Length: 163
Image (cartoon, rainbow, N blue to C red; front, side, top):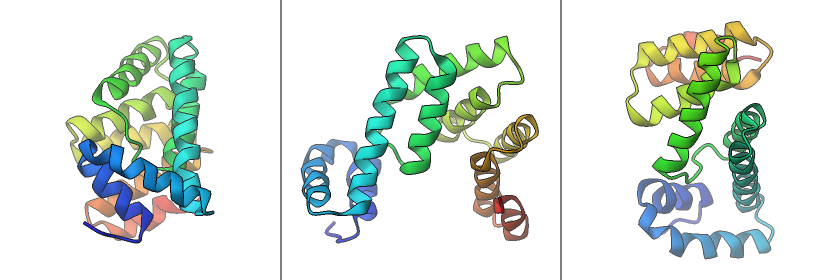
């Protein structure tokens, strides 16, 4: 697939076909050096992901979850391995078990379940719970709106997507 759109390049090579990532990263780096704002966003998100993983290894779970959410906001399709997602998910489950009012932990659980065994109604309920726990976080509203949109409920999608 040949594309001049950097997000298409990313999605095909890093998202849909991770084995081609080694061919894509040099192209992303070249484009970033040439001033591509989109390519720079990718590397910014990757840097944030590395920070989130460092927080996770230091057992600074809240910082890890907040930094991961910021990275996902910057580049939604982060090239994370199943093992990396699993590490975040396990930490989020522990944090949420310890504090069922931890919206950040619940959001990580929701994002993980979207990738593994997603069920729309379960995901929507989790997104709504994130919103009820911390209604000021726009990312929670946006994600809930996206879930409605994926299901074709565009009226509800636009209602939840406003922030």
